[in-house]
Length: 149
Image (cartoon, rainbow, N blue to C red; front, side, top):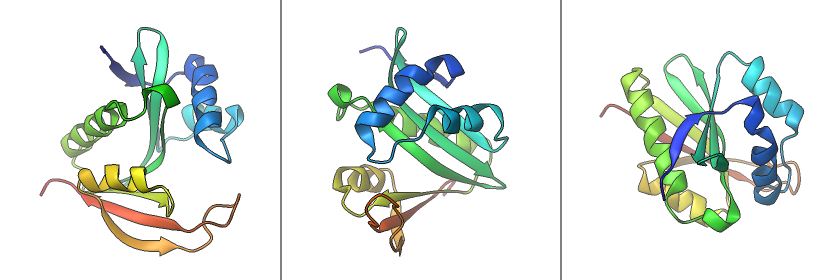
Protein backbone atom coordinates (compact mmCIF):
# COMPACT_ATOMS: atom_id res chain seq x y z
CA UNK A 1 0.00 0.00 0.00
CA UNK A 2 1.58 3.29 -1.13
CA UNK A 3 1.17 5.98 1.52
CA UNK A 4 2.31 9.54 1.77
CA UNK A 5 2.79 11.46 5.00
CA UNK A 6 2.06 15.16 4.68
CA UNK A 7 0.96 18.12 6.80
CA UNK A 8 -2.72 18.05 7.74
CA UNK A 9 -4.84 20.66 5.95
CA UNK A 10 -8.26 22.06 6.83
CA UNK A 11 -9.53 20.23 3.72
CA UNK A 12 -8.58 16.91 5.42
CA UNK A 13 -10.77 17.52 8.47
CA UNK A 14 -13.96 15.79 7.30
CA UNK A 15 -12.04 12.52 6.95
CA UNK A 16 -10.00 13.16 10.11
CA UNK A 17 -13.21 13.69 12.10
CA UNK A 18 -14.61 10.36 10.90
CA UNK A 19 -11.50 8.59 12.17
CA UNK A 20 -11.60 10.65 15.37
CA UNK A 21 -15.22 9.65 16.08
CA UNK A 22 -14.57 5.95 15.55
CA UNK A 23 -11.34 6.03 17.58
CA UNK A 24 -12.11 8.03 20.71
CA UNK A 25 -14.93 8.10 23.25
CA UNK A 26 -14.50 11.89 23.59
CA UNK A 27 -13.66 12.99 20.06
CA UNK A 28 -12.27 16.42 19.28
CA UNK A 29 -14.56 18.82 17.41
CA UNK A 30 -13.85 20.35 14.03
CA UNK A 31 -13.37 23.67 15.85
CA UNK A 32 -10.65 22.13 18.04
CA UNK A 33 -8.78 20.78 15.02
CA UNK A 34 -9.12 24.09 13.14
CA UNK A 35 -7.77 25.96 16.14
CA UNK A 36 -4.79 23.60 16.28
CA UNK A 37 -4.08 23.95 12.55
CA UNK A 38 -4.64 27.69 12.23
CA UNK A 39 -3.90 29.28 15.60
CA UNK A 40 -1.56 27.05 17.60
CA UNK A 41 2.00 28.02 16.69
CA UNK A 42 3.34 25.03 18.65
CA UNK A 43 1.19 22.45 16.86
CA UNK A 44 2.12 20.21 13.96
CA UNK A 45 -0.29 17.66 12.50
CA UNK A 46 0.42 15.06 9.85
CA UNK A 47 -1.86 12.78 7.86
CA UNK A 48 -1.16 9.44 6.25
CA UNK A 49 -2.89 9.29 2.87
CA UNK A 50 -3.46 6.77 0.14
CA UNK A 51 -4.28 8.93 -2.86
CA UNK A 52 -6.88 11.35 -1.42
CA UNK A 53 -8.01 9.09 1.43
CA UNK A 54 -6.85 9.98 4.94
CA UNK A 55 -6.04 6.71 6.70
CA UNK A 56 -4.47 8.14 9.86
CA UNK A 57 -3.19 11.24 11.56
CA UNK A 58 -0.91 12.35 14.36
CA UNK A 59 -0.62 15.64 16.18
CA UNK A 60 2.19 17.08 18.27
CA UNK A 61 3.03 20.21 20.17
CA UNK A 62 6.65 21.31 19.99
CA UNK A 63 7.73 23.28 23.02
CA UNK A 64 11.38 24.23 23.38
CA UNK A 65 13.37 21.00 22.91
CA UNK A 66 10.47 18.59 23.52
CA UNK A 67 7.55 17.21 21.54
CA UNK A 68 4.24 16.16 23.07
CA UNK A 69 2.12 13.78 21.00
CA UNK A 70 -1.43 15.07 21.45
CA UNK A 71 -3.28 12.56 19.29
CA UNK A 72 -2.72 9.61 17.00
CA UNK A 73 -5.38 7.54 15.25
CA UNK A 74 -5.77 5.21 12.27
CA UNK A 75 -8.98 4.37 10.43
CA UNK A 76 -10.30 1.11 11.91
CA UNK A 77 -10.01 -1.09 8.80
CA UNK A 78 -6.34 -0.07 8.40
CA UNK A 79 -5.18 -0.60 11.97
CA UNK A 80 -2.26 -2.95 12.62
CA UNK A 81 -0.97 -2.46 9.08
CA UNK A 82 1.97 -0.23 9.98
CA UNK A 83 0.38 3.18 9.40
CA UNK A 84 0.89 4.40 12.98
CA UNK A 85 4.45 3.10 12.85
CA UNK A 86 5.09 4.96 9.60
CA UNK A 87 3.77 8.23 11.07
CA UNK A 88 5.83 7.80 14.26
CA UNK A 89 8.98 7.00 12.28
CA UNK A 90 8.46 10.12 10.19
CA UNK A 91 8.09 12.21 13.35
CA UNK A 92 11.15 10.76 15.05
CA UNK A 93 13.43 11.44 12.09
CA UNK A 94 12.06 14.95 11.73
CA UNK A 95 12.43 15.71 15.44
CA UNK A 96 15.92 14.28 15.68
CA UNK A 97 16.94 16.44 12.71
CA UNK A 98 15.43 19.49 14.46
CA UNK A 99 17.49 18.77 17.56
CA UNK A 100 14.61 17.84 19.83
CA UNK A 101 15.64 15.83 22.89
CA UNK A 102 12.46 14.15 24.12
CA UNK A 103 8.97 13.10 23.14
CA UNK A 104 6.15 12.51 25.60
CA UNK A 105 2.52 11.41 25.47
CA UNK A 106 -0.32 10.12 27.60
CA UNK A 107 -2.17 6.92 26.77
CA UNK A 108 -5.11 5.24 28.47
CA UNK A 109 -4.13 2.57 30.97
CA UNK A 110 -6.51 0.20 29.15
CA UNK A 111 -5.00 0.89 25.70
CA UNK A 112 -2.64 -2.09 25.68
CA UNK A 113 -2.06 -2.10 21.88
CA UNK A 114 -1.12 1.59 21.99
CA UNK A 115 1.18 1.14 24.96
CA UNK A 116 2.92 -1.77 23.23
CA UNK A 117 3.32 0.24 20.03
CA UNK A 118 4.98 3.07 21.95
CA UNK A 119 7.21 0.65 23.90
CA UNK A 120 8.32 -0.87 20.58
CA UNK A 121 9.50 2.62 19.63
CA UNK A 122 11.51 3.08 22.79
CA UNK A 123 9.04 4.92 24.96
CA UNK A 124 9.18 4.12 28.66
CA UNK A 125 6.32 4.35 31.11
CA UNK A 126 7.27 7.12 33.54
CA UNK A 127 4.16 7.72 35.61
CA UNK A 128 0.39 7.90 35.83
CA UNK A 129 -2.02 10.81 35.63
CA UNK A 130 -4.95 9.85 37.86
CA UNK A 131 -8.46 10.36 36.45
CA UNK A 132 -7.00 11.97 33.32
CA UNK A 133 -9.77 11.13 30.86
CA UNK A 134 -12.94 13.10 31.50
CA UNK A 135 -15.33 10.64 29.87
CA UNK A 136 -14.75 7.83 32.39
CA UNK A 137 -12.04 9.13 34.78
CA UNK A 138 -9.59 6.52 33.49
CA UNK A 139 -5.94 7.00 34.39
CA UNK A 140 -3.35 7.85 31.74
CA UNK A 141 0.12 6.36 31.54
CA UNK A 142 2.76 9.02 30.91
CA UNK A 143 5.38 7.81 28.46
CA UNK A 144 8.69 9.36 27.39
CA UNK A 145 11.19 8.73 24.63
CA UNK A 146 14.68 10.24 24.59
CA UNK A 147 15.98 11.14 21.11
CA UNK A 148 19.53 11.43 19.84
CA UNK A 149 21.04 8.78 22.09
